Length: 101
Image (cartoon, rainbow, N blue to C red; front, side, top):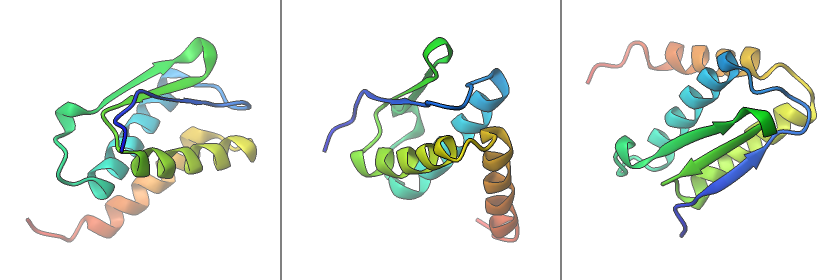
């Protein structure tokens, strides 16, 4: 079990500032589900916009695989990452909005 760093590169999509914001939110959300015992402060998400890269540090391999599959599929299909990630976050909010903690 490695905690990184892991480098993920997109081939067809652009990592604009807005896309980075959505990808960061998606990554944190997935990590909170896959590895709930890890403190968020131990995870680092960084972007290499000039190389269309995402750097993940402090994430378990299983979490990185989930994130990689999602980003790879969206990138290969040449869909707009911002739009797709936004829908995923909206759906997760809808599913969890009635929970009380």
